[in-house]
Length: 268
Image 1: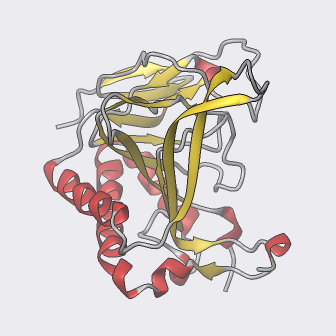
Image 2: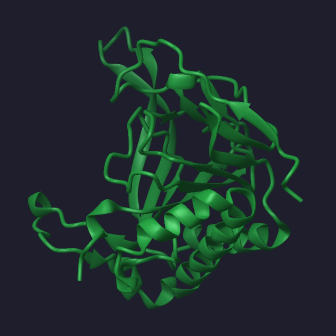
């Protein structure tokens, strides 16, 4: 089914973008199903719509995540509407709720008082079990998609993850997952990921535009449609997410992400 997919060679360009900068709004220039190559080597792929089984699992995971059944870290983002001439202070509009939840394994963080690896506390929530199960099933389906489209990457990632004990894995190719609701990440590189592995980003959205992944090294902006999947080595390049703009009340963009952390390599 996927053997005839279009290939897009990612060609490095010069740019002035730096880590920590906020990504500006950009129209996507990659919107069709394709395999990404760098110097002729296949490194990832994009599908504008996943297989039906994955779409159904993503619908369940998204609905559960947005419900009160799943514990979340909540933030309220506001966008500036300029300076109020009377007060001299910034005016704000468009209050947008941002939410995030981690499942799977979390690396040691001594500065947060956790100098040991652990399974995220979400797993202890009885009401979050449907969400966790649907995400785990989605991870397994994503792995099979990688095996079909990028078989060499699949075998490479299996080998890389063979050094991670089973208790720290989430699926076979990942250790962890995060769901980011309405979060436009500033430019960053996933330096804590296993080098040579890929991440999976599944998008759920409704009545919104933006929220696309931009990779300045290649001037590539991947349009993340509803039920799309992006597989990419997030450790390789700096990347950021364009602003998420609701087009109607209640519009949102949620990303369901799977990734492998190098902190678990060689642990007992």
